Structure formats: C-alpha cells, structure tokens
Length: 74
Image (cartoon, rainbow, N blue to C red):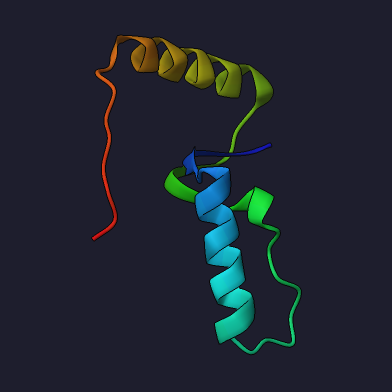
C-alpha cells in the first residue's frame, strides 16, 4: 500500500478549482476529478498494512490533541 498524509479540499473549493482548470487550461489528458483534490503533506511510500495502521492511529491521536487551524487564500 502506498501511504501519504494529505489535507482534503472543501467541496466548494475543489469545484471552484476544477471550474477554473476546465476554463483556463488546455489538456489532452484526463483531468483529476474534483473529489480527488488534496494537498499532500507527506508521502511515505510503500508501507506494510500493519505499519500503516500504526501510523494512522498515531496521526489520529495527534489530530485529536492538536489545536484547530484556519487560514485563508490571499
């Protein structure tokens, strides 16, 4: 399993980005669906299932303890 940690885009933000992309960029490829948009924070790579579960649990514990963050796009 390839493991990475990411932030998901809010649905409205993802749709706005997809609409901009579709109107502004020429591509012959297959666009990524807006539902798959995310910001990768860390790419771990190939990880055994048991280790990925331990990492996910550790991150879950950290997120519960972390102070919520907010931001804006300038």
